[in-house]
Image (cartoon, rainbow, N blue to C red):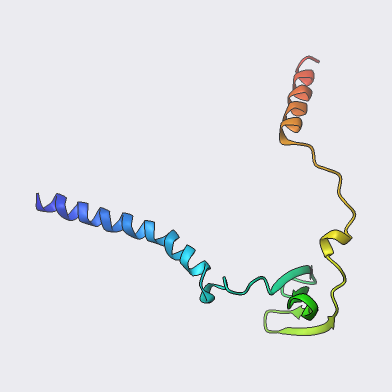
Length: 121
């Protein structure tokens, strides 16, 4: 009786810890420590890998009229500001609109048709 009670208590503590992990992550996401209070003051615009340990990154900082793009050189040892400039418009809207991708159901149907006609040959 005593052994089963100890095992049951251990199981309850295990379940409590497993349930508390997502709750703690949710809470951390909404606190200043977790970066939830940043208010989207910074976003990544583009990244260009130069080598395994070096890349050039463009980020947007600030909001409204205070927005600036920073071109940064990033290595394993340091981050260096290479250039600062005014935002060049929204990078996503500057790109040409891509052709809409076919739905998964259409691709699957085409694959099944192709496979069916290949089996008849």
